[in-house]
Amino acid sequence: SIFVYLGRKCRWVNCIVAKKLCKLEMQRTDLASENSFTAKMFTFQFFNLFASIIYIAFFLGRINGYPGNYVKIARKWRLEECHPSGCITNLVLQMAVIMVLKQVVGTTTEYVYTYLKYEMNKYQNRFSNDNVDEVTRHWIKNYNLADVNSYSLFEEFLKMAIQYSFTTIFVAAFPLAPLLAFLNNLLEIRLDAKKMILHLKRPIPRKAKDIGIWFEILEVIGVLAVIGNGLVISFTSDFIPRQVYLYTSGPCRHPNHIKINCMTGYVNNSLSVYHLKHFEKSINHFKGSKFLNYSITHCRILLFASSILQLGLSL
Image (cartoon, rainbow, N blue to C red; front, top):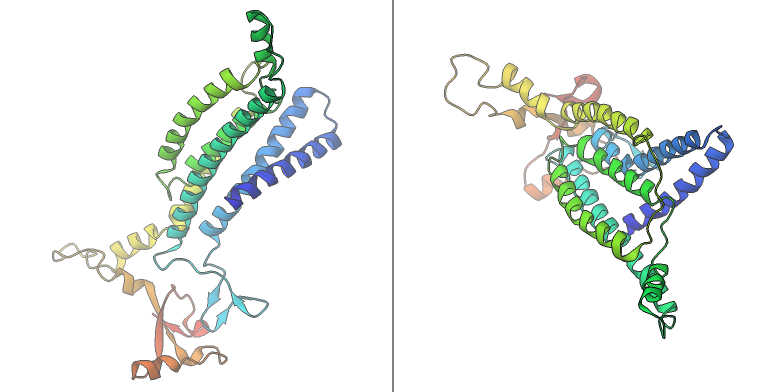
């Protein structure tokens, strides 16, 4: 929950920065200023929420180096590795945590905040209903409703755009994202209806031709979804290496193969052999030999070696 709280703090900071930038731009019309603010807020929120996902999907485990030449922070701490089953597992867990935690906490917090604000106004004016007629009591009740923020509708559009991004850009890694978004929206529709009818003052109507710049933002998300899912399938998952092994090195590459699992031997094929004589001198790798009572000369690592002489690897 601390990360959700920090995310909300970052949203307030992003709002302040976006307003400052819009003032520096000095747009000629209110519509242009509003569109500029919307684009900036969505961009800030997008990178704020997707930075960790992009890192896990495309950088985690790929910039760590290799045995004998690991990349270290301050020459002491190694970078985080992917899960043994692949980086796709880390990506699925990150998506699941963000989708569930962000939506549940965000929806609950939004409703509770409005309800508490309404109850506070009601408590402060609790003595104003004495000795008044029914019509005046109804007016006082409407007066005690919480004020509608000028950015309320903007916040709803922004939330839906971010949710649409989660359910499309990395859906290849987490197919349950649309289902979780659907369940969340079913709950949020009822909570928003109750909030708008019972706890908020009526908003002032405003004419609009369409949803404005949000339509262009959704189009951009659609393009990013095609690119993002293609990159996830190509680089994050092992779909392409498995297909290459299936048709080039696997037991089923021959037309007259025997009845056997076509992926037999894939794991062994994806591992490289690293000879311990090339390991870092600062690490004592003979402890394992003493513990197992036999000599260890090499280890297996998940890596497709491109230069055997450079890395000290053999396939």
